[in-house]
Image 1 (spheres, one colour):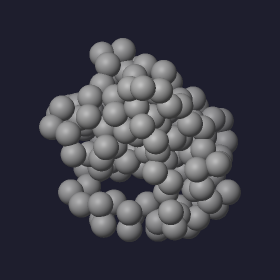
Image 2 (cartoon, rainbow, N blue to C red; image 1 turned 90 degrees about the horizontal axis):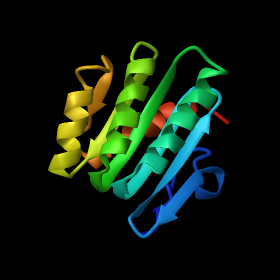
Image 3 (cartoon, rainbow, N blue to C red; image 1 turned 180 degrees about the vertical axis):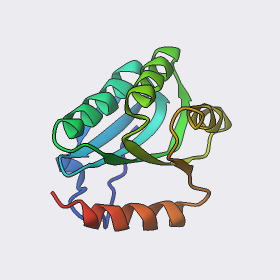
Length: 145
């Protein structure tokens, strides 16, 4: 499964991302030290993919006190329990310093994201791709490389 590049977003070319692909899916993670974390995932969220997200959040936290995250998980269909545990721990650690925007389609992933909403106060589940992309574009422009 290949990651589709985030066209049109300032500085979010695929070659500037950390990418992990295998037969179960893929993830691309962009972590700007100015406070912007963007992920795009397809297939299954695994512990290894969740670890890339965690590493990106930690890199940003070393540079700025707050950050904003965008997770394009529209093509994500499932997750491993280890991935859910890792992402839940990450949400707990950064719950007061992060604003999170997510787009998902899978009911399984929607349920997991809604559960995370009890931890992350500033979590927004976007109902449409247009709204999600408009919001990410505005924030990408505010957080240059």
